[in-house]
Length: 321
Image 1: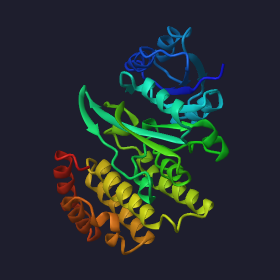
Image 2 (image 1 turned 180 degrees about the horizontal axis):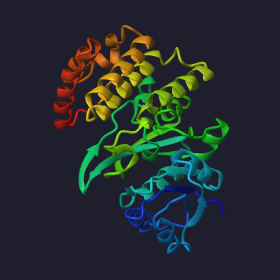
Image 3 (image 1 turned 120 degrees about the vertical axis):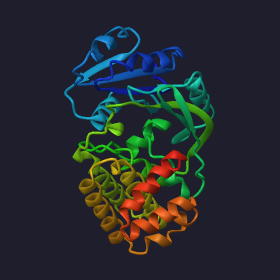
């Protein structure tokens, strides 16, 4: 019998977290779901832990290829009508699966999105999705694939896979997916817990060059819009995505590094945005932003990077970055 929902969990060295992740799903057991776990070449005890669940989940092992590679592998082996990608160090909320299955049973959507928590050592922050899914603003929704459920046939018909070999793979894809369908529903409930931990890909204090993959991800995203012939339709929205992810997010991720690293990459970020549109400060969505962010952008445009670093610290304290 074909399952309604395939849950795909990539696992790489998450021995401390994977049991909580799997148990959060199994505690909501349903014969309408399948759990596919892709062990992406883990070097710790993750596989041994997974084997304890081999009667209730499907386990695949492959050489390490990164998160995108593991997701794509899982997608190839999924039989469900819908797909939910869950990271192996995260977990889902109680009753989340029942809520999703209920939505699926009522109507055939291409994408289901929902709110989520940021879990900082069990101190949770609510993240509400407030972008209108009924107009062009929908592509500005948060880029995490884990806070969405996708109809498998929608992904297949559009030849969708995650870009391999880079991080920020969600940024390169999710806004595009929202641009090519109007069959979207947002559930105003908190169904997912995104765990922030030391040593994770997205929270590593040691500088690694792959932090610059954000430029590749944005480039890949733009190419998708161009190939589909809809880049002009979403011009202002794409420009704001660049501002958000290159000016705000990227620079807030690198501000903790040494001065030479921080300043050189700020220059690269500014050059990138200026080359896209030298008048980016006039973006309609930026004009609606929090006052502190607008001051940040003005300082950034004038290369006052030390001031930007100070503003970043202030914005982080009030949860605006």
